[in-house]
Image (cartoon, rainbow over all chains, first blue to last red; front, top):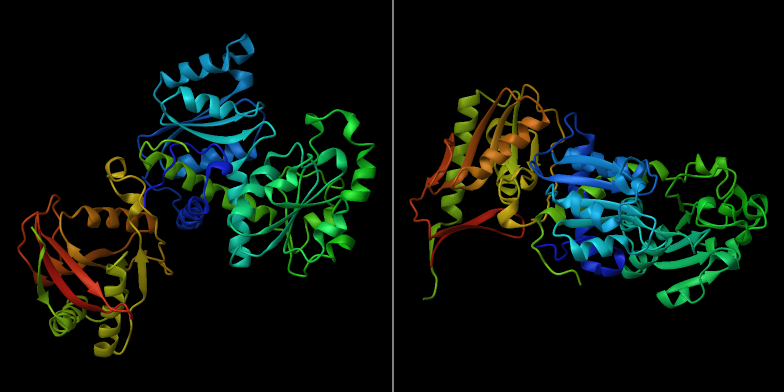
Length: 311
Length: 178
């Protein structure tokens, strides 16, 4: 069974079978991360460039560790240290990097569609590590992996995604991924933070957090992205926290064995109370741990995949 | 031209070969102390299970059983594409153990090389021995099995298939000529 995609640009392009192939591959890689010698020679001699135009510690480190555990040579380039600050265009930056013959470019960019733009112009595989408010496929896949690991399956689960839906690429990728594997998705946030018409993608939309998390199997909280919005969407953080924050009281509405997830970094006391973030239902560090295995799977699949056309 | 299939080992033949290999393993290792069996997925892991049962029936003690997937250690990712990854399950420490690596068919030796690399990444075994049901020749690496069920001279165009039943017991070995 060959993987039919040269690039991983978003969940939107992946079928249910693709998603399960990635999760099953990641399950095989997870075992390596608990060994004394955490390295296999699978991608020996391959070069992976992590091209991060936006600040990121967690995702960049996770991709870097994933590449290194597969024995690839990984190089990190961040916008602040690249010629972007000298006025170089994205395409020129990418062409210069391509001249060094990388096999895979893992890319984060503040503009939606930037990885797609490069995928059309460069020969190497592109993995989207987050583009604007569009998609963050590796995060959604590690979320699915974590849910499946804890719950046994994904089909029929009720998943509430709460917070700033409009600015969240995590929410968008998770919405595509969860609906594709048969989970029921409920989105909740203030009217200013839920894009109109998003229910057409298969989600229930709520403006009361309690309605979204009632009987939920999974409660996924999103970070309030203060850097992506003016003050017009929110009267105050305190008010948001009061109406949309997850705390021990409203968490009781969810199923007693509900998982609490957060893509990080958390604003403690804003979207999630510290007692919940540190409580027994949280799987936030499991998400981080599984992130490495899922990213190893993505790198492995795009490195070995035939040069199939991106659908 | 249609394929021609010849049965080269039936159920009884396989049973005799595995019983002999079990005796040889016990004799060579003087019992089961520090002995573990690790099968190569997929096929070798089923055979390792049968061999472990056979050893237990003879010696009264079943050696620990593991399975390794060697996909991550293959040297042909470029030509084969991304193969489905299986699970490596070795639920014991391999340091200081005498490992019998088990596979169904030995051919070029590249799978065994990959399996040895995989085992050495898990620890430092005292030694690694190799048991195979069928040795069909055509080695590309200096690898020689310690225990062989049957030597079957083949041409490179031919194929050897080991069939397993629903209980994952080997039931037939076939030579397929194109």
